[in-house]
Length: 82
Picture 1 (cartoon, rainbow, N blue to C red):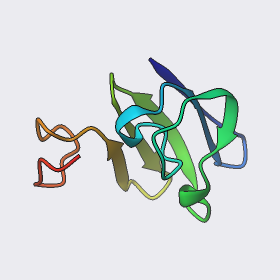
Picture 2 (spheres, rainbow, N blue to C red; picture 1 turned 90 degrees about the vertical axis):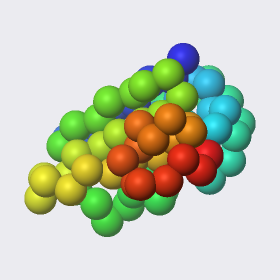
Picture 3 (cartoon, one colour; picture 1 turned 180 degrees about the vertical axis):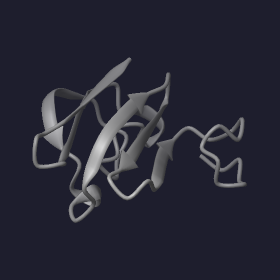
């Protein structure tokens, strides 16, 4: 229900369904076109994955970042908060 891309410079852009914060823009709005995920600025991201209502990014340094729907624990934060 949403998509993400990583630029050659390691910036992440997302668009589509924004419910549950899945896009990473700090809100629950839908976006029709690729929009910079500003919360990840400063992180050099090498890859992303989009779940149904959650998103994941892996940095060049190997850190795994996640956001969105976490009720089933799929974000890996040890929390089921949304």
